[in-house]
Image (cartoon, rainbow, N blue to C red; front, side, top):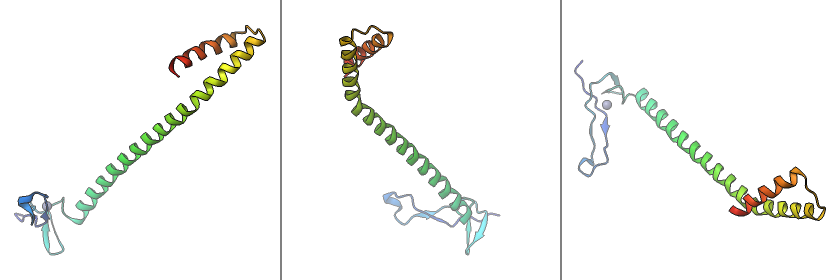
Length: 117
Ligand SMILES: [Zn+2]
């Protein structure tokens, strides 16, 4: 079969405003014209499905990125309050002359947190 695909392709270039015929070797005769495998209804549906899947995967990645950044912001917003609460706890332990391992741990964490607050 030496028929050529008659599907009109639009490249979007200025010198191709009216588009041009695909011209690839035809595989099927559909709706009165010869078409290559890319331009049959099935070929176009396949391509659209692939583009939709790609788009959906990009959108999913953006949604996840946005969720992560929202979580970071929430954590950052509560960080100051956590440091304040820890400071109060350490002061309370000081007043009670407490010398437990958990107090030492709280002091270490407070020091680290204050360094980056
Ligand atoms: Zn074609």
